[in-house]
Amino acid sequence: MNTSSPEKSLLEGLAREDKDAIERIYRDNYNMVQSMIVNNSGTTDDAADIFQEAMIVLFEKSKNPDFELNCALKTYIYSVCRRLWLKKLQQMQRFTRQTEDFEQVVPIEEELEFHEKRQNDFSIMENAMSKIGEPCKSLLEAYYIQKKQMQQIATEFGYTNADNAKTQKYKCLVRLKKLFFAQYKNGK
Amino acid sequence: MDDILLIDAAERYVKGEMTTEEKTYFEEIRKNNPELDQLVVEHIFFFNELNKYSDTKSFKHTLTETVAKLTNEGFISKAPLKGKAKLVYIWNRSKRTIAVAASIAGIVSIVSVGAISSYTKSKEPDTKLLVQKIHEQDQQIKQQAVKTNQIENKVNAVIEDSKKHPVVIEKEKQAPIESKFRATGFLIDNVNNFIVTNAHVVKEAQHHLIVENNKGEQFQAEAVYVSAINDLAILKVTDKDFKQLPPMPYSIRKTNAELGEQIFMLGYPKQEIVYGEGYVSAKNGYKMDTIYCQLSTAANEGNSGSPVINRNGELLGIITSRETGTEGVVYAIKSPNIYNAIEEVKKIKDYEKIKITSTPALKGTDRPTQIKKVQDYVFMIKGN
Image 1 (cartoon, rainbow over the protein chains, first blue to last red):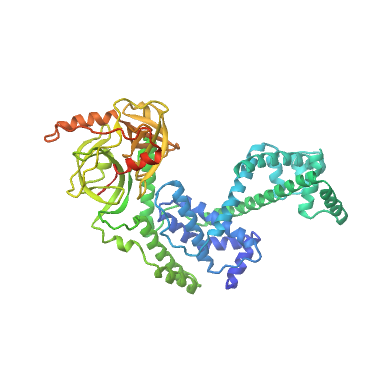
Image 2: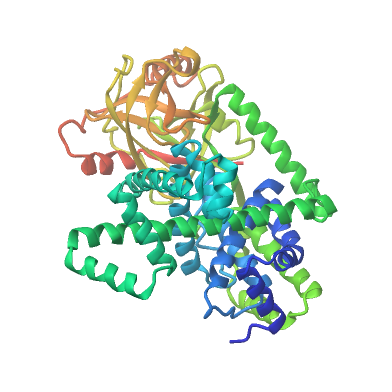
């Protein structure tokens, strides 16, 4: 719609996990969010957490090619952070008041619902990962997160060849999958 | 081994690494073998989840790196902020210390302390100063954003938009008395209009003490007995407008609560009366304190002073505190302490003859009926 072009390229950079873009977004918005949270019963650590969460929300959004911001990026980030923080405040029972009185800066309910689901899935997978033990965890992380080649992994983990490493990887995957679904089905 | 082959195939299928023939063959097998297809669907789902996980994980890693860089540069500071923010920050920090102190003590009392508008008979939703603060800061921060950001118009539009909405807080300023806490209490004597609550609740009220019934009507009250030792206080409703209630539907038990007894409670953790239930989980309180018993239930700020009643309508205790760091551990003063307190009150002139009157009218009725009968006797305690 009317996302101004510098912001648009910033979002495109974000979708590519471009470090400069990420840094720019931090520089432009971090202090604003930090003062909002610190002024509302939060700490600088809370601010760091909330900002990171908002970045993940934005990252997910930016990966969608159809995504367009219909407000300034700053307003968007502020709205997301504020909503996330209010939710956290409620969960921590620092105050028990309802938040209906708060006005939305821009509505972001849909995003957050999606984000919550994603986060839930994420923590189930993380939990499963933490339970499979070594060398499975490192092996899978090397392949799926660090995106290393099988050959390199074989060398690093001391397998005789890439095929052996691959077989090991699949064995680990079977276990991970079991752990993941055990929780995933319970959680639903 | 078959499973591994299948996973391999599914992974290559998801990644689009299969040749055309292989893909056709694979899809053919899936079509003809529903059981296998089911497995493949599961694998594909799993791979998608794994990929999403990996993406987020790697993105988080990049974020952490960025934060580390900016922290090194001094752009992100963990130190207190300048100006007004600093003050709040220091307050927050000391609040943390207070919280730590409370967790060393192990328990916190559950009065809801905050600015609550009070003594107004209007039924405006009650809002904390915190809300006001957030509103104010919204405005401020947005205005700063306008200064620093090139994209003024859009932010301005947002400010305009928020200005259009009426701000609820402005109405509150007309309230004659600002209550700074909220708790619960209940009637134990319908002749003298005595209400029992916690001593730590009364301590909050240095100027005014107000009780509010579940219809929102407020009455002046004063403390006639406060004991810090067993955290009990007895208030007398002094307001002329207060209409005498029929005898209480609950009785106050003279013996201690039994382990495992089912209980319910009514209190004011929010502006309206809230029902909760649980059971007696230990005969003594925190660190074996014999004044208290331990309940397994949920209590929130504002529940201090709530009556704990069993299904026969016997009042067993008064909610006082909850354990920090543990879910659902709540402490209540045992009911015999109320009798001790009344003995003390009898020593005061004019109150020599007070007697707890009650008709055990709750036995054998269902819970909604019991609540209906009890709720008129449970009051919100406010003041400043």
